[in-house]
Structure formats: structure tokens, C-alpha cells
Image (cartoon, rainbow, N blue to C red):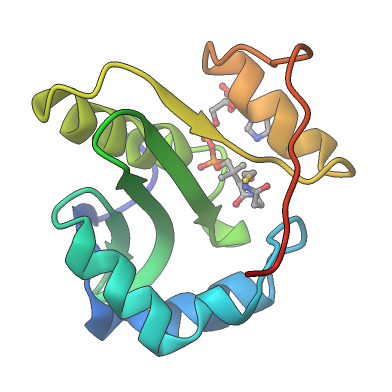
Length: 143
Ligand SMILES: CC(C)(COP(=O)(O)OP(=O)(O)OC[C@H]1O[C@@H](n2cnc3c(N)ncnc32)[C@H](O)[C@@H]1OP(=O)(O)O)[C@@H](O)C(=O)NCCC(=O)NCCS
């Protein structure tokens, strides 16, 4: 895409962990938890190979998307683009890469969570053609 320099989209691996965590920590709208520690994230990547992607500029990580599947539906997490690189299509490209990888695995639907206060994040997904589900409530419980 024009005007964004040499940016490559490639697979996200555990070697990206430190740079990704640094990006997520300085990204408002990103909900982080103990599931984002290196161990659980590595397990997630092992269970879901080739579904998560990173954007790199000059070798430095500038965007991420995590994607997993339970074998039935897909789930996206942690779509984040470094503020300096936003509004150049990178967020769209990262999300599309994960969706295409899900489709190639025969997974035909994907869900994601957006924190209630993240209006810009919600606007991004709506613009990208995702449907806001007002018919579902999310419940969570510690095991
Ligand atoms: C959301 C985010 C990933 C978008 O990344 P991006 O690379 O800027 O996205 P794109 O350039 O592909 O944007 C595509 C379209 O989405 C819409 N969009 C993107 N950012 C938007 C914003 N802040 N407000 C409203 N609409 C937005 C626009 O219509 C945009 O097209 P345009 O630039 O031609 O107007 C990035 O802003 C970000 O990292 N935000 C913080 C983390 C977050 O909220 N993640 C998503 C929720 S989980």
C-alpha cells in the first residue's frame, strides 16, 4: 500500500512476544490479563499455528493480530497497530490475513470481543463489515 514504506505482514511467533507485549501495554483499548503471559501465549500459538500475524517495518514489530479456533469457530484477539502506522490499511490487512487463514481451515465464522469503552475499535470493525451482536451477552468465570 502506498505511503507506508516497507511493511511486511508475516506469521506471529513466540519470538515476537516481548515486542508485542510492549505494543499492547501502550495501546489503550487492549485488555491484558494473565493469559497474555509468555507461557499461555506460547501454548495458544502452538494450538493455533499460522493463524496469528505480525506487521513489521524494518524488522520492528508495528502491528499484531492473534487468532485461534476451537475447531468450530474462529476468535480474534489483540489487533493493534502502532499509532505511527495507523490509517494506512495495516489493521485491515492483519485482520484479513487471519480470516483468510481460518477460511483455509474450513472455519466459516469468527468472533471477537471489544471493550465497551473502545468506540474507535468498534468503529473499525463496523467499517470492516463485522456485525455487532446485540443478541448475545458474554459471561465469564474463573476455573
Ligand atoms: C483499530 C486499529 C487496529 C486500526 O488499525 P489501522 O491500521 O489504523 O486500520 P486501517 O488503516 O486498516 O483502517 C481501516 C478503516 O477502519 C476505520 N477506522 C480505523 N481507525 C479508526 C478510528 N480510530 N476511528 C474510526 N474509524 C476507524 C476507518 O474507516 C479506516 O479507513 P480510512 O482510514 O480509509 O478512513 C488501531 O487503531 C489500533 O491499534 N487501535 C487500538 C487497539 C484496538 O482498539 N484494537 C481493536 C479492538 S480489539
